[in-house]
Image 1 (cartoon, rainbow, N blue to C red):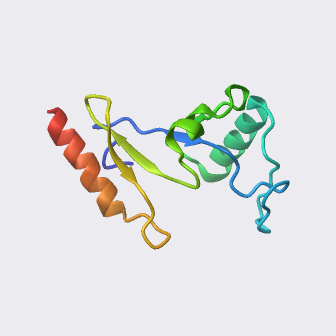
Image 2: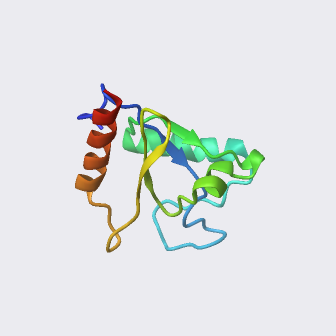
Image 3: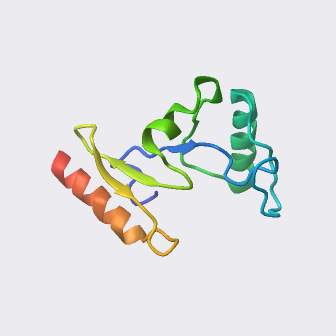
Length: 117
């Protein structure tokens, strides 16, 4: 984030709770039920920001609208998207062996920046 903070806008979208205690608990230290309303999702997001000093702007996928980001982009469990200067999805990172090589994301960001200049 720090390497790109003056060149790109970054946001995070908090979608469905991956391991909600009422759906698919995995014994985590942090246990939440699946949010039933926007206020629940906002509370969980704020708790996360406070607990981790999270610095990237965090949006929520509104429960009240039926989780439209999730329906449109299918981001579960986690994805990285690069939207270029023409407001097109120019890169969608998918996990490789359960991980995301940051070099591929950096390359996509660099290419989008270069093309928009």
